Image 1: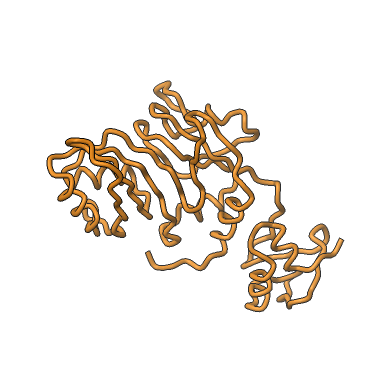
Image 2: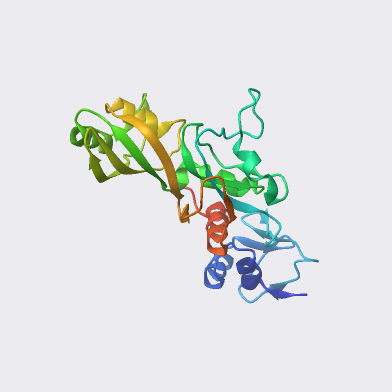
Length: 244
């Protein structure tokens, strides 16, 4: 059954209908090898519709879930040392799902699982500068000075990084609760940044990646992503990359 291209693109979760029309006008959509124009229709069962050279996906074919990973679980599909894995906690979600990025064993919080490899790559790509937000409990001799150094960081072990956003939530004697937002997601980045500023991390919880939030999800439990969250992941795949 034929439908307007902008409706098909919107139904696939790539963009709103108005944004889909802009994509068509920009020459980013083809039907059976020909550049599409606004007003065209296509049958997704009979025609080949490409957006930026990629086949137009259909909603419902992929799975996207959010897990609240507890401390003590490793972010691998299997562990040769017999440790508990985050994958075990989502085994009842249906199909084979893979974690997007990592949380080390001592960290906890939001961990996305999906079978959509392109969405995973888009979410992790540093050029998209997706906000990764953490609640971090730290200890140190001079908390204000250490947080000032943390806010001014532009490199980590010789590699450039975007300066993090750091908000003090509460002072607790020699410790503090802070919220830290980064973009890169390098290996153990938060812990390494804090250590470089004289802070020891006692607890680290990822609470958001972009608009995908942990909310009140209990530790060890998972939920399906909302339509808006899935739409965000799909839009990342067609978003022009910026310089990191």
